[in-house]
Length: 135
Length: 259
Image (tube, rainbow over all chains, first blue to last red; front, side):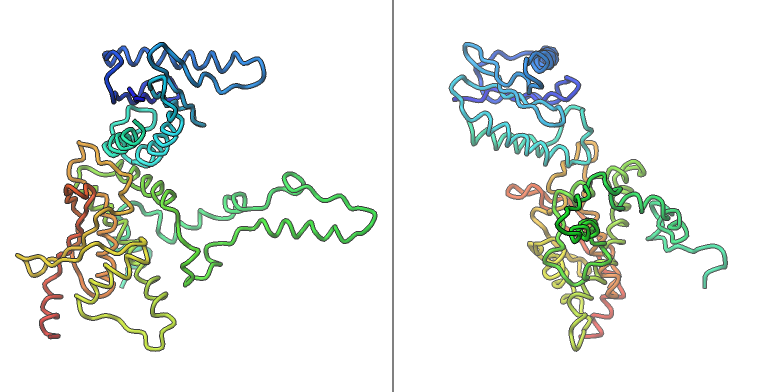
């Protein structure tokens, strides 16, 4: 069980937060992460439109051979993506906890501009704490 | 004392805007307030019960449901009831966050920023002192007012802080080097719990608001002082904040005389 990384994608498809926690996935340049996040945003839009029966929440898990992406869409359109190992079962809970930390330490911080990259010290600390519990 | 026609405003009360002047309040007249809190138009959200043939009594239910929708006004609530009148931390934090963003747009530099937050806190503190005095001494047979500084300081740090913020101050200290300086220390102040100061803000402490509150309380009790807030991060408490009180010389002289 391992948590490799966390992405937060704003409602326009921009990557506002990206952090690696464990080795196992190849490191990319900041620009490559931005492109991938944008692509994921597009894929998510397609999957939420394709549902044959009414509205759909869109893709929630993408599994690969060595890892999986857990995607959590909030009511406001922000996406939290947690990259974990295949055996991980706690991603849902972890994402929920990270969302709570985001609501507290990012949205309530007067010095954060919504939809912009997150540079908030206490959020970093809190996320590190949560990852420590679940990893 | 005041010249006619020109309102002289206390500098403390006029820093941010003049919109708090009584004359401007008339613009908050009728139209907006009635639409905001009025009952929903009849028949839209509360369907009128269909009168049955059995009784006509059911008709009387219609005005009853309408009456229940009226929220109690803040002025209708008892002033000395504290147990159910607590405000959620989240609601306060969002309000405080907006206050900071509003202030930030109107200041140049950190010192100015803290001064304006202090002013906002000062206006809160005046009212908080009055409210606290009303709640604690209002029903007392022999209401009293503290006249010695150390008792006042300990009342602020323990009783008042507990009443306003739910927790007493973690420590109250006297400066070793200067006899006119006192410190109230809070390890993790609730109001700045979710605030991360960005690097370009440097030493800004948003507890300047609570420093203003302390300053107003001291002023109101007749202890003029200069109160400032400072971040004193430690290993165990990265959010530790000190509220530094620098007393006016006249207070020290009076304390000396009272001994």
